[in-house]
Length: 236
Image (cartoon, rainbow, N blue to C red; front, side, top):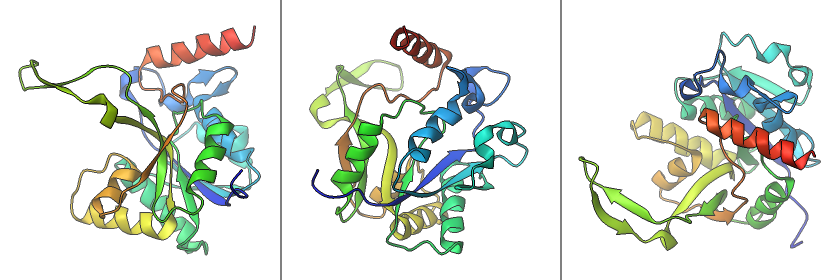
């Protein structure tokens, strides 16, 4: 290792509904291997010795979270989620600031429905970005041929895939810098799809740290089925 792992806060925006799953509850509360997707997403952080604390952003009328055993974990603090992901993350950062967290503290933001984060990926992210002036994110280089399409669904060009990465989480930035970037971008009505895009909009260049391709986000029913099959194969 280059150095000891830095301490960090974790933020989990979990106020979404996940309508594409067509389920009877938000996708983060669907079952995977005896636990909910959300519990799996939390465990990698809760098991980490360098975790300073975790803030989860939840919908105001969420009836599922209180039923989970981890809801009683003293390391987890709860805040209200917002209309968009950026609002939920910003609420969590405001909560950390109010609790005395420092602007220079590292914050890792992770998707609530990304339950397959490997500890090795988490540790590598912490090691590689420990002294980085900006921060960065786990990502995976594009493997397939990529096409740019026009409004009619016809190919206009083939994109150089060597320059394209798929953004994953966790995304790791300093508390103060991320807070300012998110707040300023929201005031300016900029479309923010992840934390890195807010940092990019502020004029900085996050670093890409290659991670495992199986750190997938559950978005559609086939994603959950793939994870269930994979875990079944690994547990044989």
